[in-house]
Length: 204
View (cartoon, rainbow, N blue to C red):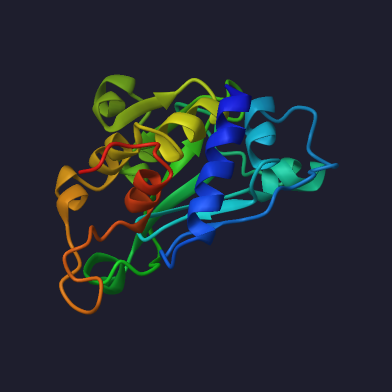
């Protein structure tokens, strides 16, 4: 799966370079000081790109994976699951919704379990933290992938990206189109359009 992710990242990087889409794919990271205890798939994924994002999401190598100091600085909070590491977060701004431009950080994050390496999404993190009864919160906890490589290969740089949008932001944004300007009528989500240009997603 790592080689599949590598191929998809490069295809998206090439498609981005040939377009003026509002997307970002950062350079590879060596991560020579990555902690030995960190989930290996997460470290492997970010060795292919430091960051990736479009109008709706941004993913960035967290400090916890960059050094042992960052790993040890993780907050120790007693809760149902180990305090997660943020792999990324949803982006919100009026420009991202109407013009397809890069937004600003906001909303809930996409979480990495530092022990198991699972990737998941929690609808209301503050509510989740306050509860110790799994039956109360299990409906807002959504497992996504067994590891970060699978998550990025399928859910960010691959065919399941629309599912991520639907899960976190709602299915309506998949059909949202730019209202004004020279790109009027195009899909607002430039990342969706990038995946189409890279032939990693069927046209909508």
